[in-house]
Length: 118
Image 1: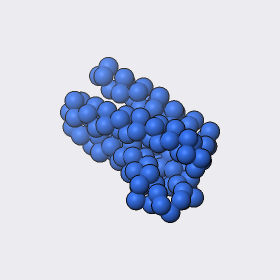
Image 2: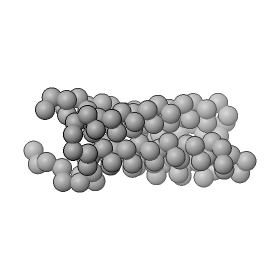
Image 3: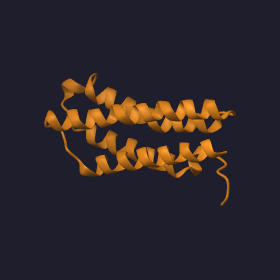
Image 4: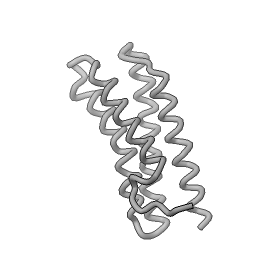
């Protein structure tokens, strides 16, 4: 298996980026009153997942890498809550977003596990 040269080579980053794009699309239909509230927070948290994967990729030590990946995991859980809140507020309930988030979460967990083996 060939070693990834950039974060863009990571499947987990690719999937996280697709999740960000989906969240931007879904939140574009949120009420204008949420522009500086839920819309902004949801987008920020989704971007944080992919951004921390990217930043962690370039860190030189394993503890540094895992720290950034763990921050990404925290943002995954934050997004999980925003999905619940969006559904409960009647803004949207997209099963694909849930599936995408679960996939990113599992991939990141697996990636961290593999790194810890080295």
